[in-house]
Length: 246
Length: 164
Image (tube, rainbow over all chains, first blue to last red; front, side):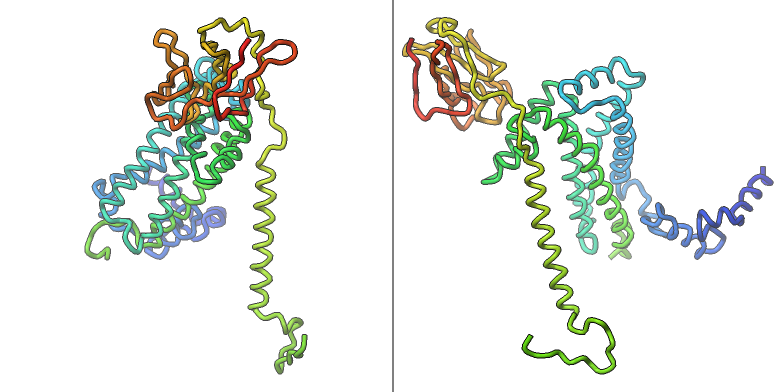
């Protein structure tokens, strides 16, 4: 066993490994830092963090849990797309097929649905936690603003996804929601027309909501998530409430 | 250009007059112009020119389908055809609150919205709930073939009856 581990460790010194992982890890702190800095995925995170930042009580892991929901939603959402046609009235039949015909379809659909509910809940909880701990204060005030954008994106994702089952609940929820939108002064009716692609919730609206839900909003979310995580590092790591943090 | 700009000594660059300020001006101007063009283009593109929506004019058939003192709900078209003491008139069944389809409750003799609880009399006047306006009266007339026609796109400003 020890031999095997040694052999695996020796892999790090091969040319192939070096070509993939650039700096690579090693014994010194510099090598360890480079392993994080020079990795496209890890470089968003800090090289070092305070031990206290890992305590459950500091964050309740709410941001990480929100990200977890987002990842689950991405995977299940892409899988659901394989059986879903965003056209009226086919969408409703596809949704029913996912529930009763497709193997594991009901599992994926429910996972997507419950993760969506959980994500909205967790994002709100995350914001309350940040607010009541004062973690929005300088130098982190701009990351709070990005967080507000992410909250809006989360809510829009939730709202656009609501129409896709194309059942009575979806239809009337979007009818009511788009009429609330029409209450915007002066431009309201026009905005509603552009969002729905018509005067009523119809096939155009279903397609527009589908594209928003599956392409536009997720891209915006990923962009802002990237900035959000990068800013945590740039703003001095998680707010732990310790004196040294100021 | 009234004044010739003197080339600074030793500068052999191809574009002496192009200061950074000028470059920024042209650049910002171009970005603004492209932005404005893209907004117009985007707005035009997102507004459908052809809609496959049903005609606002509904053919409700012969008037004798609506006996005196009756309220007929046409849920497909979102209208009520009421034959009252003064004649036939049509009401929109779309709630003026947030656009839900209201329902005729024959046992109570009222129109009620399932979404947020607005209640209306058969003349469209609201007596309970959040709806800000009465249910609109719709332009109703009888065509040459003797069919009742209702225009859902034209709410009336005052009561109007069709007498047969």
